[in-house]
Length: 109
Length: 114
Image 1 (spheres, rainbow over the protein chains, first blue to last red):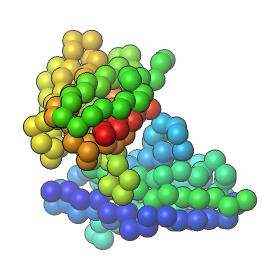
Image 2: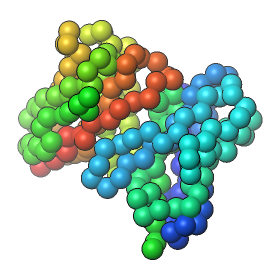
Image 3: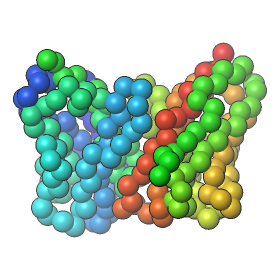
């Protein structure tokens, strides 16, 4: 069974600085997809970024990028130039079906 | 396009009762998945439907069931409610089933069991 682990229940970052959220997973598959979703307070969950396992290049979406290390089964999310609107719960997901417990990100002005 | 809608948004039920939650996917989306979200547990996958057929099922007891209609709308039912069923139930839709597709989430139904 695939499991997804987010070891940081809460993280805090100063506005304009960079923060990295960790995610590890366990699988015996060689081809799969990994996702980061963002759930702002009282708002709907939205996709932040997606990574295909067979692609070695790390995905990037504006200020969001991932560090995908397939051998280590690690998939961390880096948020650069953090903004107040980045404050949310962040969930890592495997094949869009198995989710981690989430990391609550606070952004300090 | 209208987003994923879920009704009702809030529910309070008593132990032993049953409840039905509804989800309308984005127009054109044919795959619907359901999740249970509780503090500290993250999102737990309940089931996935496509073309009125259940494709995948998570590790939940048989008290949790669902169905999908020909217009892709979906319902989930929880019978004999327990206190531990209190949670936010999220519905998500995608154009097709499959692990590569982004899921579009609804606002959720907050169920409280007393």
